[in-house]
Structure formats: C-alpha cells, structure tokens
Amino acid sequence: MRATAAVLLVHCLLAISHAWDCQTVVDIYNLMQIDAGLGQVVATNTSQIPYYMVGDKWIPLPGSLKHITIGPAGIWGVNSGNIIFKYVAGNWHQYATKVKQVDAGGAGFIVGATMEYSPFCLGSSETLGFKDTDAGHTAIRLAGSMEYLSCGPFGCWAVNNNDEIFLMSNVNKDTCQNKGWSHIDGKLSMIEVATDGSVFGVNSDGQVYTRDGITASKPEGTGWSIVPMYIPMTHVTYDLGRLWVVSKSGLTMVCKR
Ligand SMILES: *[C@@H]1O[C@H](CO)[C@@H](O)[C@H](O)[C@H]1NC(C)=O
Image 1 (spheres, rainbow, N blue to C red):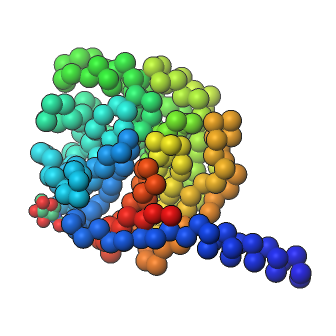
Image 2: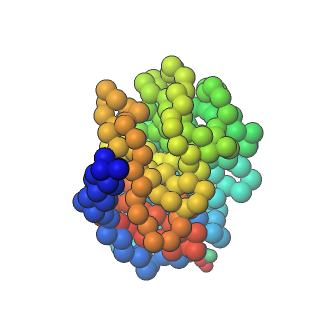
C-alpha cells in the first residue's frame, strides 16, 4: 500500500512540473491538420484551404489540400483526389496519386501512406531534385501496413489502422534502406515527430501523449507521458518549444512548458 501511494505521489509531481500552458489561437478557425517544422508552420482548414504562418498571420496558399507537411524536403501536400504535390516556386506540382498522407520531417526524404495503407518512402535525391511531373520518380515501398507516418532525426514513427504504434530507426535518407518496424507499446490514432526528435500523438479518445527518454542511441525512448488537455484533441504537432493542438471542436491551441 505504501509503495502504491509513493508511486502516485511521484506521478503527480511529474505532472505538475511538466504542465503545459495553452493559449487559444484566435487568428485561425476550423483547422483540420497542422504541421510545424524547422521553425515554420503550415496547416489546412476543414474547407481544405492550405495555410502558411507568417508572423502571427495565416497566409492562404494556392490550391486545395486535405493534408500538408513541412520539413527538410520542402512543403508537400495531398488533395481530396489523393494526389501528392510539392510546393515549388509558389505552385503545387503533382507527384503521384492514391496517397492518403505524407510527411516531410525526415532528413530530406519523405514518407507517407497510400489509400490502401501501403507505407512508402521517397529518397532525398528525388525529393530535393523534384522539378515537375515528368521526371520518373520511384517511391520505395516500406514493409507493413500503416495509416499515418512521421519522421525525425532518430527515425520514422507510424500508426496502423488499428492504432498500433511502430518505429523504424536508421532510415537511409538517400535510399530509404532500413531495418524494418519495431512495435512500440500504446495506441495512438496519429503521431508526429518534431525536428528535434520529440514525439507527440493523439489517441482515439482525444488524449495527447509524448514519448519520454528519446535519444540518438535510444530512439524508442522509455515510455509515454500524458500531456494534460481540458478538451479532446484530434491533431498535434511540435516544434521549437511550441506544441500545436487542434481540438475535436475545431479550436487550435499553442502550448508552452
Ligand atoms: C478556410 O479558409 C478559407 C480561406 O481563408 C475561408 O474562406 C473558409 O471559410 C475557411 N473554412 C472554415 C471552415 O473556416
């Protein structure tokens, strides 16, 4: 009994010292999804308008997208026709079809999932050299079945359509060569890796979690900690000390420790 009480007390102290202070973002409404990386923030709203944040203003980008991502490989998006695009000189250039989600957080390469939950990777020489539709690009099919993928400096994290979590470390940025997925404990419906390697996700109940203890030599970290939120969330992204969360009710908040 005494041991249980001590454990509970430690959990409470941890929760307090790790508290996040959240403010509602008042300049943008009805976001569907948001991605922060390399100091920049992009988002889509529920009318599929893509946005780029400049100062405290949200600038609409051209076109219509249901998912947008920013990272070392540039700005990429997916539209309602499941076509993947790269943002090149102010316009969207088509890359491939039948894609559901894409992430540009890896070291110059991109990963994503097709409509049939096939995970894929496109090496940095192809993403960084991307110019237009005509060049013959070859995506590498990754193992397994995944619904949402995100990469950072220590590897790629993914969830499948059963909310199971996986990690692929040591992905070669040029060839996408890797050692396969390792299963990670817990259940999440989306997951995002930050430029600094931190990992955040949301479960089907709308609770936000972060992975503790991630380092280059221990990319899987040590365990999940809950990030307390007062309302259920659908989407999360983190960069440079700012945790961006979108609630099920359509509010966007930015939180700092
Ligand atoms: C999405 O953004 C566009 C452009 O600013 C705006 O006209 C539209 O009302 C927004 N959609 C929602 C649901 O807020």
